[in-house]
Structure formats: structure tokens, C-alpha cells
Image (cartoon, rainbow, N blue to C red; front, side, top):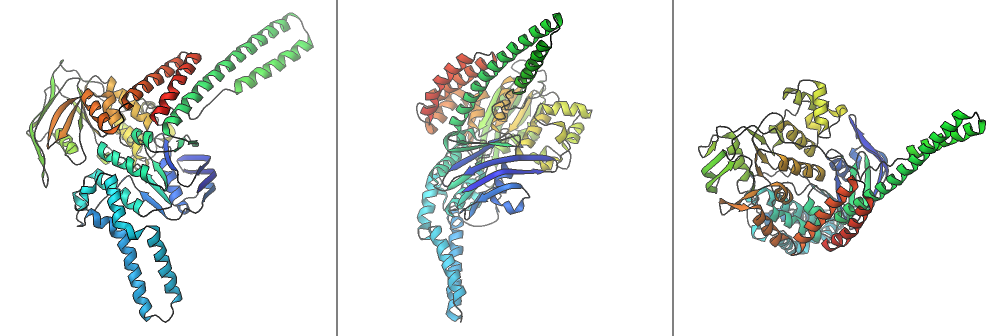
Length: 581
């Protein structure tokens, strides 16, 4: 369906792709992954509308037909009065309206050829989208997404996650030849994420999805495009199989590198012996042999392995230096908090955060979690009380609150307190921003790059409590792991709103679970058990635990050069990856 050869494209300040080639066959579900800023969204846009880009190389989209698109920034008109059912019927009703208009024109027209052609075109479109069964198909899709009870609701009454799913359903009902989705999972709660998973897996068309969701990546795709440093690697298979192949390649490369290093050492020893012999006896033949061996040694050194996709640089995320606080001191107390908009969302909410605690606020979309966190940040609600020793920092999911978007990256951090260009350059290099790119305006960055910068800005100064509102959103999988490490290592307290099960399960101590308009505390063990019970097979937790254990062992073996032990662990990992599907 789609084929690119030697495709190159970039901006004046940054080259994105350097002669990349790829294919997307009919019916495949392909995920685009890669580091933040590697050009994933741009590549999806280029495929969607190649006429808008001045690229080099060839890009052929054969028999694609209509292209559907779901943006990561779904904005709705909350003043518009329309039910979910009527909204999903709009495209079908528009086609039927056009059909009626053509028939009306035919009644008085003298020339019918053009109208007959239009009539046939609309008939073909109605047939292509299965308009006769529109109501049945809508009901099926809503059931699949677990939204069947929302059909009669006003669109404005949906949560953000529910609205995103409705956008996906609307595009799927159009039955495009290619459906492109850009981070459709952003901010979805776990129930909605399951709905999105089921919609993707039931869809029979060709799909191209930009995503960082480890859950979707593990459950939804049969092809991977991995973008890094201007190059693209294509893999036919699941994300788990792809990660397994990367580990396999890493071990193979280390084994090759060890043999290569041994060969270099032998060549160096031979060169040294020949040099010693040449100084003792002047012999033209020995000099010629020495010259040949030196050239041989240089060739071997030049053949060093440089794998672009195996050793991917991970940002060094950190949270701010933890300001001093007495052990077990109360840094934040929320007492009898209530929240209402058009209806009561939360009431009688009480909890406290003590020094060093890491707590996640978890619950469905639209239950008031972010509003609660913003009220805590503002500290104007009488139900919110900070401790005397508290120094708090805040990460917002509304990125424009944290930056002046017209600033360059470098200027933003000099205004934040870093004193010299060199200091900014050195600091941001840890977050995978190279000095040559720091002149770019913040408005030009991807969502993931902006969130990395927001984390970098948060880390400046001293704070013993950080409030994090969806910090893993838009971050690539490598940055998500780095964030988890930073939270785990942080000596201060963390209060985090998140829908990312992995981030919560991997680095938080406990959960405040939003339920029936209030919040109840839950241990992280109980939370993990609840999630696995409802959303995974009974053996999944055990398999995932064993998988992580083996992957950690392989990484440790490779660090110390124990290639044979790494290969044995990889053999044990293979059947686990296969069993996880």
C-alpha cells in the first residue's frame, strides 16, 4: 500500500530523515516509535498529505483511497448540542442528504450524464461505508469501546477520554483505506485505554499509529517502524518480539565486538614485535611486513560496530534536590475537600502527604483529579494546608503554563536561573538536547520534548514535594523509564496524577483511588492486583515479572562482558515472550 525509498526530509534547523526506506502492506497495524523529537508525527503527516512537504526520494501510496486521521489534540465545541449517536451518524446523514439533492436535481435537469455520475459516486461512498447498517455498526463499536450507555448523552457530557474514543470510532466508521492516529492514548484512563485496544484489534483496515503507550504497544501491533537519529528500522512482528530481537542483536554485537577487540589486540602485539625486530636489524622486507600489518590493524579498528537502534541514549531525568524536612513531617494536608462544576465531582476528600511518600491519584477521566491537584498547587482553598517546611514544585499537563513559547530553549533556561550558555548547554545535554538545537523556539518542539524540558526546569532549585500532573504523557518509552528511575531515586515526596499503569506500579508507594465521588487509599500491591485481575490474563503478572527479571540479568551480564551468560538468559526469555503473545 505504501512504499518509500531513500526518503529525506528536515527543517532548516534540523534534519529528520536521511534516505529512509519502508513499506506498509494492506491490512497491517503498524506502530511508529522512537525518541522524542525524532519526527514520528511529521512522518505520519507526510504520509497523510505528501503534497504539503518538499521531500527528497520517492513515496508511493498505491490504492490507499480515503485517509482517516485522529489527532492527539481532540478539541470539542462544548456549546454544541448533539448526542453521541447523532454525532456518529453525521457522515452517513450527509451522504444521504447529497443523494436526495442529486435526485431532486434530476427531476428538472435536461442533461443527466453528469448527475448520474455524481449519483453513482455517492452510491459507491454509501456502499463503502456500509451505510445501510450504520446504526448496527455504531452500536457494535460503542459496545467494543464500552461506551454503549453513552449513545444518548450529549457530546459535551463525555469525559476527555470518552470523547477521544468517539473520535476514533467516527474515523473507523468511515472505513478509510488508511487510518492514521497520532498518540490516541494520551490522557486515557485505563478503562478507556482498554476500549482503544479493543477498537484497534477489531479494526480490519490498514493502520498507522504514533504511540508511546507500553500497554498498546504490547497488545495491538504486528509491525514496528522505529525512528532514531534520521534513520528508520522496520520490523515485522509485535513490539515484544521487536524488543527481543534488539536484545538478541545487542548480544550478537557484543560477541562480535569482543572477537574484534581480541583480533585488534593480537594485531597490536604483532605490530609491536615487528617494530622491535625492525629496530634491531635493518631489513627492507621486515619494514614492508610491518607497514602491511599496521594497515591491517587500522582496517580492523575502522570496522568497529556502531548500532544505531540497539544502544539508544536515555535522558538523565532527575527531580529537584530535596529540601530538608523532618522525618515523617506532614508536608501537605487536605481536609474535607469538595469539588463541583455542573455536578458534584468530589466531596469529603481528606488525606495527607508526609516527607518522602510517593502517592498517585488514580481514577477514571473526568472525576476531578487534575482540578484537585491544581487547587493543591494554588493553595487558596481552605481545605488545602501546606506544612511549614514544605517547598513545592509543579509539573502541568498544560505545557503553555510552564514556558514562554516564543523563547528559545536556551533563553528559557537562562531566565530560569542558569547563568551562562555553557551551563545551559551542559545541563540540557543530560536531557538529550544538543547545543546546536537550543536556539529553536519552544513552540517548535514536539509534545514529548516540551515535557522533557518541563521536567528539566522543575529539577532546578530545592523542593521537598513535587506535584506531577500526567508527567509521562507524550514521553517516549525510554524517557518514561528514565522518569520512573528519577521518581524512585527522589528523596522528597511526590503526589502524581497519572493514567499510566506502568509508571504508577513501578515507582509509587501507594494510591489514592477516586471512587463514588471521593478518594480511598489503596496499597500499590492492591492496585496492581486490581488492574491485573480486570485487564490481564491470570498468568500475565507472573510472566511479566519473569520477563523483567531476565531482561535485567541480560543487561547486567552485558555490562560486565559475560556474553555467554547473556545468551543463556536470552534462551530462557524466548518462550516467555512467545507465551505473552
